Length: 526
Image (cartoon, rainbow, N blue to C red; front, side, top):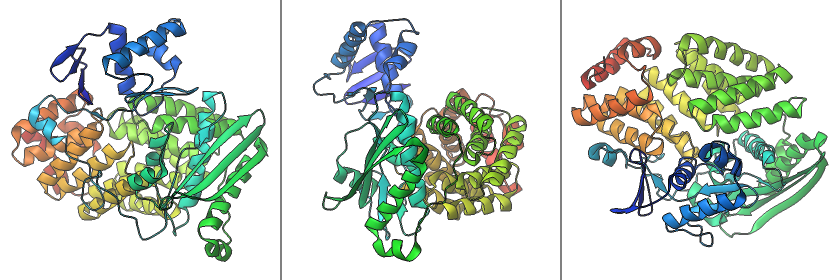
């Protein structure tokens, strides 16, 4: 794989760093450190992360680490003063902040994968987003002001709960969690955030946890004027933290739309487990789930099982566990026969535990899709979206269920809306892959190829874009692209075959299944 940033190319197959055509000499540890930062650019990496990966857990001095980091910055024309590519996050760690592209080594495939991803209007997502017809708001991840980086999960959880509570109000257009969290650990300009996400209001805040006390600050910003509309500070014992979250939500709603608050007497009714330990485990698990890799899903499942052992009736823990298992099965990371029964039991338990939790209905909808219960699946996703209209992940998988049901036009609308709700979502590659699948079912092969290329550009390690690009290119007569895409697909999912498709992919209509199989036959799959 090649990572392109600024004027540089980091080639993993040759273990080379080049600037334009010039080879940059770097020591092996310096190369490994740079590669680790680039590969994990979606998060802040800690000193412990670097030691575990680059130095295999060996004890090193701070001076040695600083020396290697200096060499990395020098190699890519950066410095500790400017931090254009590698940013130091005080008391947290490091993050690679340069814009990275990962085109294929094949020219045609690489050019195709440079296509911009889908937007709701069909335009590239880099274009300015227009404000919707409702008040549009984003909740930035609350800053962890404690000395302990392990408390990040706590401040993240506060932000996520606020997003969920606001999303229950249909009068608001609330940006989904993953796009908001793209700004985690960054110093942001409110106007730029507003333009980037297409919102008129931005909520930001901080959490300082000290022993059994917590201080939460929050403020509401008007993007157009750059002014603060409202700010508040809450000092509470941890036993009252959920009540504090409700107070924050009510205060924000009252500030933005006082008459709405007066008319509806909004009160949050979210159910929470009795144990903070279980809640914390779920917040940690979600941080892994959102990374959408096989290894991270395994870690997420282990954390969720621990949470459920503490609180067997914790609906969200059960629901996310179910969703993780169906996601792994669909991507070929686990056997359907093993994962789907586990997912079904957990999803049904989640609905019994909390029938008002959108995650529970999303999880059950995923199970129904894989078991070819199409009407039940669509009903569950619609219920999840009624409970949380800004649930971009549920909206995209709803699009997948519509695609497998043959309703490809509606699927295209659903996935486009998911991307508008969450334009910087780590799952955006999957959303584009689902949109490509819908166009494939509709026999619109050029558009399917474009969307599949966007999916690959966003996540070169994920299978959905390669599946769709292989099939669409084969049906369009683009044999070279189909062959190259199939080769990449088989590298990422060696078990993928015609037999796997026939057994595991839940098409409602035999004509759609046969069309899909024929596409892969033309590509050379056996």
